[in-house]
Image 1 (cartoon, rainbow, N blue to C red):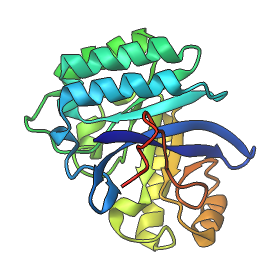
Image 2 (image 1 turned 180 degrees about the vertical axis):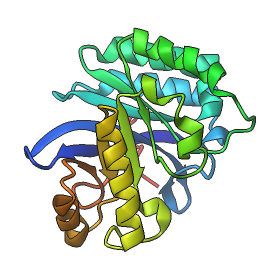
Image 3 (image 1 turned 30 degrees about the horizontal axis):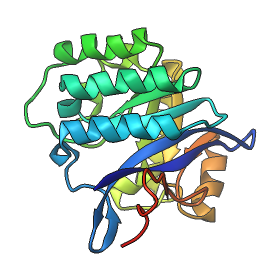
Length: 227
């Protein structure tokens, strides 16, 4: 069984909620856990759960974000479900986040760009997720940047805290790169007060992490939260 959890995204400076990210998890004997590989989620399951979830959302916010990897982007059933979800959510805006997961095939960017452009034509935003990791390295995403509205950097992917000088350098690089390209920059993985204060010092407004709110289950059935 797969379900989406939602986690808030905040504008810390204006103390406002800007959106929610949908995070897919699988129900296991140990509780709800992220899939080891999101490509293992059957396309039909991904599509049906996404559409059912968006039908439940009547949130007075600007956007809802959903993660897909390159395999899922190339899957017509998943793309159709995303387009249907945007239709259901309107006037809320769907943000499609392209993750860093390594795909089964090395899809060239010229294959991805028309599919991403279709989302944009339907009124969605495109986000490059977890930049600097996996296949979302700088040299791999440059052709996709002109399509993007947003870049995200996740400090937890490096197994270090934001206060580590090397992590700070990476955050500053992506922050400045986003500003240069007129993109929103969201810093993910803020886990404690120290992370929050240093994000303040780096003048990063948009943030996401356990410090601001843990993901919570969006139930499609009454017994979704029972084990």
